[in-house]
Length: 280
Image 1 (cartoon, rainbow, N blue to C red):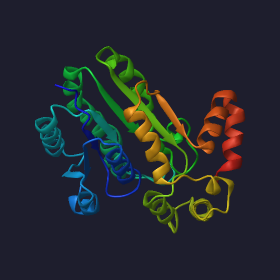
Image 2: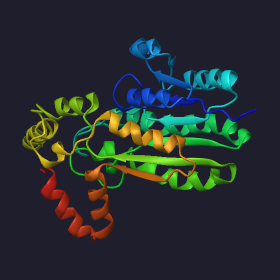
Image 3: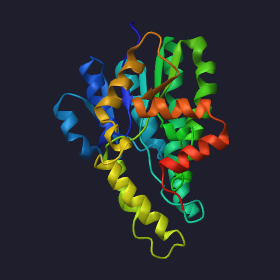
Image 4: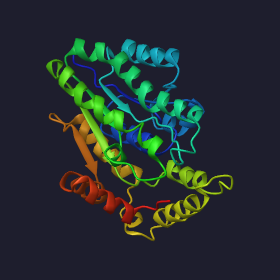
């Protein structure tokens, strides 16, 4: 039997996940788009894409989704780990009870889903694991350190994973965009504003104003912001390439920032971050 090319994409209700599902479907892959609320996927169903409920914090829903695809196609051939949850605020302010759910979604949920699809990929001796990370998995500006702390582990265990599964012809790729115009970004703007009980109130107000300027294209970062479709094109490249790269910085802003991170000493890079991002 031919190896399965069936794609499982998480977090498809909006943004990058939805765009990736559409892009892979157009490329001819059997796509299974998933979300916590399958009712948000009706537009994808109408375009002929299979849709499933999948919550990456719910073991039963992950097992059920992988089993369904395996029964239909023999294995999950492509996993796009996109589902994510945000945490905003200074390290001092953010309650740990809000950090733990983000870790469950962004780290443990992704790892568990990889564990579930790998047996099928190994058995067919091929597969692609594509993880949506961020340039903020490589450095961390003020105001989002605990969210960025859920992105750094993706970078760390991907380095191990792609070596461990290479003998089975399973390839692992990280997608590293900078600013992307999605609902995720709009939600972040709202969460930064109006924390009147915080010692960091002035910083949050400044950060909210900065984020609005970025979102509306009044800064260089905003003018270079990516669409979900631009990120989805790179997801497709990683999913179908014969020799996918381990990392794909997406866009000029991402390549420039990560180039500076590699080239500059820590103290010099900290100064660069302080000039580019608001700080208390």
